[in-house]
Structures are given as C-alpha cells and as structure tokens.
Image (cartoon, rainbow, N blue to C red; front, side):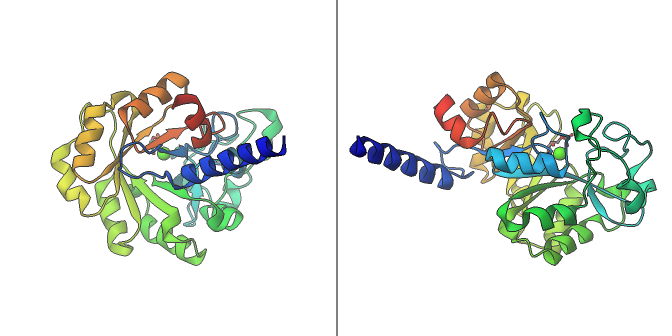
Length: 275
Ligand code: G3P
Ligand code: CA
C-alpha cells in the first residue's frame, strides 16, 4: 500500500513538473498556455479582483486584463470605453475621476452576491498579486488616451513586476511599436480581428517586435499555425469557451488559448481530458 502511494505521488510529481515547463514554446507537442480572459469571467465579474483571484486559484497561466484610463489619468481594468454594461453607472470611463469611478458597483450586473465589487486600478491588481501572477494586458483604444503606453510601463516598473511576467497585446500596431521603443524586452502580441488567414506578409516586420499574433479561435487552422511558426512567431487564440472549441484549438496546435473558464480548462485538466 505504501509502495502504491509512493508510486502515485511520483507520477503526480513528474506530471506536474512536465506541465510546469510545457509553456508556450513553438515546439510541437507542448500544451498551450491558458489565458484567463478578463479573469475567470465566465463565472465572476469580469476584469475585477475576484475574477483574477479565481483565475489564479484555477491554475490559469495568465490573467488577461483590458485597460482603459480615467479622466485623471489612472489605468483601470475594464473592457469597454463606457461603464454602461458592467457597472451600475453610465458614461465613458474617461469622464470619471478614479474616485468617482470606484464608487460604481461592478459586480451586481452579473449577480447580486458580487454587489460592491469595484473596478480596480492596474496598480491595485499588481499590488494584490505581484509577481505571483503573469499578466496579459491589452491596451484598449490607445488612441483615445494620452500617454497610455508610458503610464503602463511606469506602473509595471513602479510595482516592480518582472518583465518576464508580462505580455502586452493590442489591435493597434502603432501602440505596440511605441511600447517596444519604451521597453524592448517586453513580449508583445499583435491582435487580429476576424481574419480568415494570417497576414503572413506582416510577419517579418512583426517579428522585429512581437512574440505572437492573436486571432479569433474560429478562424484558426493547423495550416495557419504552421505558417506562423515558420515565421518564428507564436499563435494565441481568443476566446474558446467549450469542449469543442478547446479541442479544435488544441488540435490546430496553437500556443495559447484565451478562455472565460480557466476553472474548466487549466493546463493540468487539459492534459488529462484531451491528450
Ligand atoms: O485580447 C484578446 C481578446 O480579449 C480580444 O477581444 O474584445 O475580448 O478584448 P476582447
Ligand atoms: Ca481583451
């Protein structure tokens, strides 16, 4: 009996270690990293501390964070430019001071048990989780805000977050170029929206600054993944939320998967369910 227990412990230990190091390398056969899209947002109020905490507990590799900026220049974690859909207020984020923004309830829209949950600042997220988490940050609408990229780099530095724990993503190439100039060693992801094929013409230029490209999960094929790998980039897909979508993403060989349900699809579980 003792021997059996020892054997099981060894197998679990070896498997955990294998998974720990199976990060999103281009090499074939590795499991993709799991990115908790807006935190564990399928079950908790998106882009809030509770959603990020639950994503960490679920074993997500990265917390995905959408950034907007308040009138007084604070970076805050909310997806839309307005507060209308995810709080009890109305109006643009940029029309609120941080003080007023944080009076809003960002939890009740999902369920009354989350009444009183606030929109956090990026600094609060960093102070809460520090270097025990990895962050996958999207600069939303960077053209709508002044010096958004500079502020982001400043927050990362002020909070002493290791650069290897950060990925920055954007649909705006110019914003990524700006970040690359400010801090060349940060990993960057160029996002594409509803593209049916990877614009491989972009890849040689992108390779100068980016680490990966991001696309809708329903557009990606194994051939696309191969093409992107041949260009020396990784491919991450957003946002796969059920078994079928996860299975298709895994079969196509992507390097990272955004999901609202890291509690269902963390890498340890994927290893057992789909391999
Ligand atoms: O960042 C990838 C994905 O999150 C982009 O879509 O609208 O959820 O920010 P969205
Ligand atoms: Ca996003």
